Length: 324
Image (cartoon, rainbow, N blue to C red; front, side):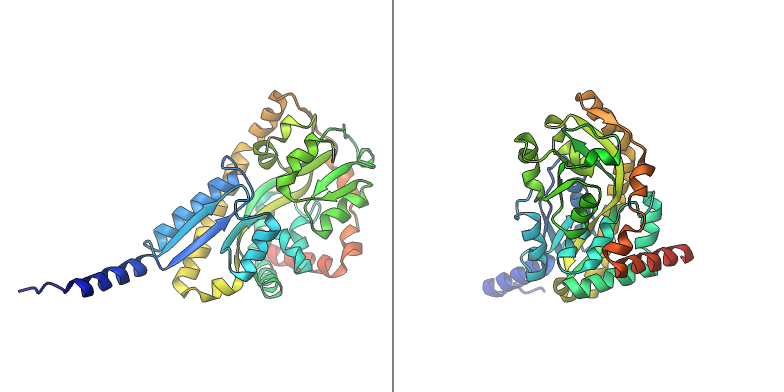
């Protein structure tokens, strides 16, 4: 005959069971709106990780810079106040020059080429080196599409960029890129960009089409210029100390959830890219398709001058991707 547990013991058993059922709470932050693919991807990550860990992990998603601006969130990964950030791994350039690899101009043409490079042995070694130098691990990379310029000024050739006040992410390579083209780059946090365009503080900004559209930049610019100057990847990033503190099975589940969500983001971007161009047109924005090769030609030898070590690392990663 089964004996009834004493109330106090039953309460302790219940509390222990609850604690075991939800051992880890992961706060995931990003800067985009709830209509952006970043948020859809973050929700996919939550769904995949919670399912794979049978409720031992709870993921709380905070969109629209609710956990602070991107710089604060990235630093939060290092000190443990945030567990995952979905954004550009180029943000890690604050801590290591290797982060700039994610913003290299005209590095490759397609999603497939970029994924092959980052998923190669050379790419994995680079990500490990970034984690060691920055204290932040890129769990997976997610195709965002090409970055294009939205502007209040008409731009058809590289020469038209002269003096253009363009917002860029606050890292060295985007600043150097646009200075190289004769523009006047303005580093700025993303959540400040709409108002800066509206008030004429800047003339332009550059981002993948989906981000520009869901941020409503079509309301405050006249032109979309399809320069495709960076083929962009986002990343699910986690503090290295926190990652190493997780049990091995949860580490693996976290990586797999990030890969699942990254594939979802990439597929969404590919499916919607042409639709976003039409949305800009329908909103009254003039779409300009310049000769991208003229822009690309301006960057011949640029990386070798900007950072010879990075240029050598790029060649190593390309060769590794070719042999995969």
